[in-house]
Image (cartoon, rainbow, N blue to C red; front, side, top):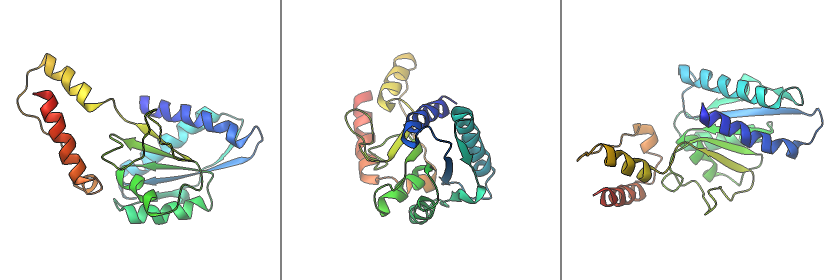
Amino acid sequence: MKKLFLLLFILIGLCPFWGNTQKPISIGIISDFEANDARFSSLNQLIVDEIKKTVGIKFKLNVDSSNWMSANWNPAQAATNYESLANRCDLIIAIGANSLQGWQRGDLFKVPTIGVGVFHPEIENIPITDQKTSGTQNFSYVLTGQDVQDQLTTFKEKFQFENLNMLFDSRTSKSLDQELLKSRLELLETALD
């Protein structure tokens, strides 16, 4: 829920971009989840509800479920969906690693786009600056957690563990830079010893 509130603050920051008119705002959502997955519709609806609460009556939101698209865990499909939504939506929200990877297959972001579900920008090939922003015009994202190394160091101080496994959904794992992931995990292992 904290992640959604962060998303809402980002959206509030985008509101001046649209001005103080009653211009309708059309929202598109691209999600890794398959359209028949219960998480697809429930998560999309939760995001739309939070956006509605944030913008209140100042803006008229056009929320059409035809603008809720599944990437089906496929970055190429996410890129196709992005192009389609960019032609008819004012704001796009991309949920999941594959949906976020899809933008790299196309041009720069044509409309304001927010990524949800980023856990490690470098491994996911998501741009990040020293200021912890994307540095990319029309693109921002919600970083889902704190530094994994800091969290595990604190955890190890409290509970001495010898083995640690990190699990990724196989479809998400395919979208990650495997060499970079391996080197980061080796650095993490060294830091925790």
